[in-house]
Image (cartoon, rainbow, N blue to C red; front, top):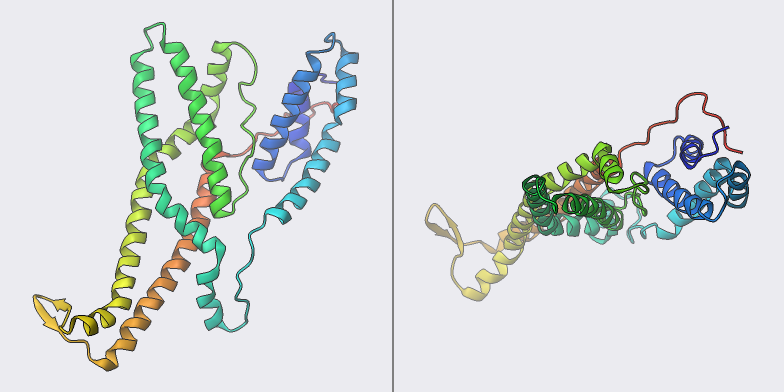
Length: 303
């Protein structure tokens, strides 16, 4: 019978096998925080541990409560569905214009340029200074601060991904390195693969951000130009369509073609943004959350 916090957490993760990794991370963090605080007030005996577990709940009970709560919270936080619900394919195609998930993905793509530049700057500067200051007395606390900042950014980025892209992300930090001295904490963070995948995500986010921002701005610039060109030509009274240095009039019969083309371009851009948002959400979850290793076979249950 493993009467330790680590053993309890292993059993909790086993009881949550198959659940969303973000849910597992939240449950493990809450459990560790409670158990360590409660055990600090006991004499450290097995009886004291049993009393704490009895007050908090067995891993199976906690896992069940978290699964039930996740269903309730997910229903409460679910984004409203599109106002356009129809079996008509045309109505469904244009319904993306009022789809909150499409607008959330579009906003995330635009915002990712700023966040990507910030993330890239933090990682490059942080790694450079960490290596440069390693031989000085301030190197150790700076390394700890940098790693803590990376973990905080991982949590913040996850909240943004969940809010804008709709993917369930952790609402608590990971439990690695919660206890121990500075050396133990740095060692645990350095050996946690999520530290390195988070840094890689932060570096790559700048390139994704540039690509996303450029694609969105270019697409909407073209679409708005197509929509506005007939109206601007009428107001200006001169041809505005220039091809190979020659100006061309848009005939009146061509006005609907330009307007329809611009509208279809906007709708198509929204659909593409929605798809990109889903793919980026899955990518972000794989890089920032990953998966939890299962406890060793035969681990004794905590009772």
